[in-house]
Image 1 (cartoon, rainbow, N blue to C red):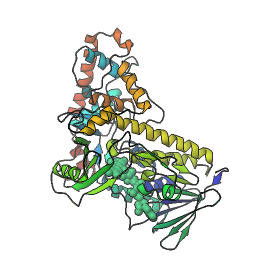
Image 2 (tube, rainbow, N blue to C red; image 1 turned 90 degrees about the vertical axis):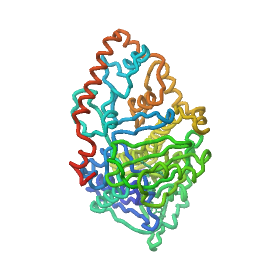
Image 3 (cartoon, rainbow, N blue to C red; image 1 turned 135 degrees about the horizontal axis):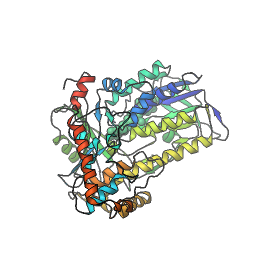
Image 4 (cartoon, rainbow, N blue to C red; image 1 turned 180 degrees about the horizontal axis):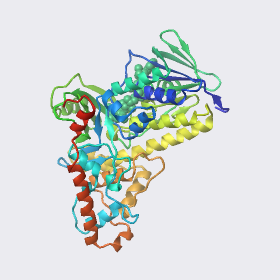
Length: 503
Ligand SMILES: Cc1cc2nc3c(=O)[nH]c(=O)nc-3n(C[C@H](O)[C@H](O)[C@H](O)COP(=O)(O)OP(=O)(O)OC[C@H]3O[C@@H](n4cnc5c(N)ncnc54)[C@H](O)[C@@H]3O)c2cc1C
């Protein structure tokens, strides 16, 4: 790509979550410009049909399209998610919550955790979790929508959704079509590349149509129909760091009132998820096929499910990693076509959102060239790597002894970027934030603390406060959080008030 291209026609291949989110956002962005957007999907092939836990960025995504939280909760049978509960990652009876929110309150601009660690190093054993409103709401199955003008840091938490992926796809689809997106239901069976530069020239459809565009967006899922099968862009394989490569999943009856948190329960050679919706439970097990076979993983998952299952379990194989160039010539891959990291921190849809956000910015002109493609590829590679490191951290710090997989993960040589962060934290509690991180410092703190990785020292500015003074301050923080949680409605009450939840 040498000269700038004018974009008058965009074709999106794939009608899964990523395809319809892309169509919705682009049709919203360019509704007053003469840009034609077409989405090609194959109803015969279907979508992946999983991907139901999100992070708070999703709420920002749909609010830009004009949807309120309550609109989406109702339309997708969704429940509220305050974070993820990790059960068993330090041994069978262990548990901690990674909340979407802060821990404690800074004093004199020194981050809270340094005060906490000073007390901890002098023998105080109050759990770190006691200083997080998000954790305590999640633990007690309470929920309220956070204030847009919090009184102080102790009031700051965020939330996301557990939703029905098919219903969310439908919401995005209806929105896109009402915004003028053309839909073609047919299978792309051939992709022609230009002889001169290898860019995409024509898509051949089974309904005999031949489609051309100025820009092609590949949302065709793991197969990467355009970006890989046709253009052979290449894939960076991260299996050396992330050993899980298979998942099984099934939906089941909802037995208990839905909790406002995802459960990620460590098992012999992987972990099992529970994602509660208003009307059913989503279950799945992610595991390493090198350490356990599919039948054993499947029976572990099914044995752990209360209530009847709704269909035959499905299985998925994947290679953790990312496409070497998500934007190659006139093709941009989004969603599973651009890469995949296991769903431990529910990041795939978030990476779809960040890709869409960048594309809409680049296309604002609307023309693009190699410079935009290079910037996009750099940013996406960084975001993937930062998420990769965060997920590896969970495995690296595990405390399980029930299968060689967990020992393998503890012994793993992690990427330099991660080992530098861990060293800085171990030394004196320093939290290194790299550009393009999706997860902030408090998320890292939640995992460090939850998996018993404590610093040897703390910021020396804390030394000027006596332990007695600090203890008083920290007790006040705990009391404030407890009082907020005690006086708050349950998650089930919130859903009953705003949705058709009978629960
Ligand atoms: C086990 C598992 C659990 C997951 N859990 C989460 C989670 O909790 N949170 C999260 O954020 N993400 C999760 N994900 C990821 C999430 O499912 C995906 O990121 C999301 O669904 C987007 O998928 P997609 O749209 O890219 O692909 P798909 O859903 O696979 O859609 C591909 C589309 O392309 C179409 N297509 C393919 N080939 C052709 C062709 N030749 N012609 C025409 N159309 C074609 C298909 O018909 C389909 O419409 C999970 C993934 C897996 C595997």
